Every structure is written in structure tokens, then in C-alpha cells.
Length: 191
Image (cartoon, rainbow, N blue to C red; front, top):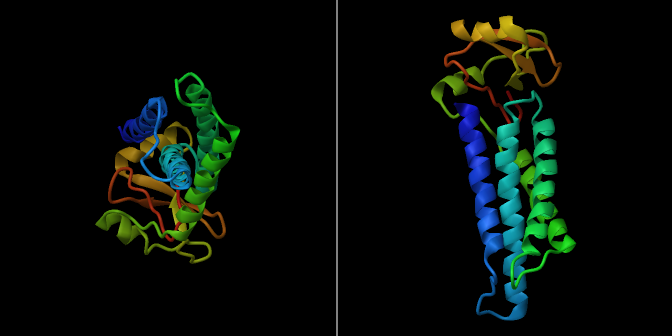
């Protein structure tokens, strides 16, 4: 269910971008330079949000937030190229590789913003888990590790979850307070 929700958010945001690209003219009654600036800031914002929601969806499939962001960045760039191609078919619009470059600024901005934010648990149970320490090195920078194989998948039934230390990469198990709650501490983590 969680994967469906995350991918629905991605599809919804891609649909918003598609609809905005389908509008024949987006000129506002301002001077040309302001109109140009607003359109390019719109590109940056659209693709920053797209990269964030794609990264959020890809975190379901990888242990690494960086890998999830790189996959999201690649998908966002490809969507940006397809969006510019789509605009070539709209009367009054034209596709531009310059706009793909501006989209890439939004993608890069999403990474900078994500790295500067602290993502702690969204619930009381996740905040409690953020106080856990790695049994190997005592670090608190832990994240939820992906389950491997049938036996680890079945461990969900008793709410036993794998975690990994971001410092020493030690993998260990803890009972979680919620079935699929993720541990996120100081911008690190993934599922």
C-alpha cells in the first residue's frame, strides 16, 4: 500500500507538469524579463519537487538515500527531455534543451535542500528508535535496511526489522514498534 501511495504522488506530480506543458501560452502581463524569470523559476520548482517525490518512491527499493536520489535525478532528467519533446507538439510552445538544463538546476536544488534538512521520524515510535545506537560502533546514524530473502521478509510478521549503521555499515536487527516504520536520523536513512 505504501508503494502505491508513493508512486501515485509521483504520477500526480508528473501529470501536473504534463498539464502545464500542454497550455499553449503561459505569458503573464509583466515585462518580458520578469515573464522569462517566472517561467524558469517554475521549471526549477517543478523539477525539484519531482525529484523529491521520485526519490521518496525509489527509497522503497534501495538502502541508500544517495542511490535513490541518483535514480530520481536520472528519471527526472529523462522526464524533462520527454516534456520538452511534448512541448514541440503544442501550438505556441517550443521545446528547448536550455529548459532541460534549467530543470537540472531544480534537480540539483532538491539534493542541496534534502542534504540540509534533518529527517527524524514522523511518529513517536520513529523518534524513540532514533535514540538507538549501533551495537558495533555506538553511532546513532542508523537507517532501516532492505529485507533480503523470504526469511527476512517473514520477520515482518513478528515486527523484527533490519537496520544498518551509516558509519560502520554494521547490519543488525531490532523489534520495531510499527510494522514498516522507517528510522531516519539527521538526513540519513532509507528502506
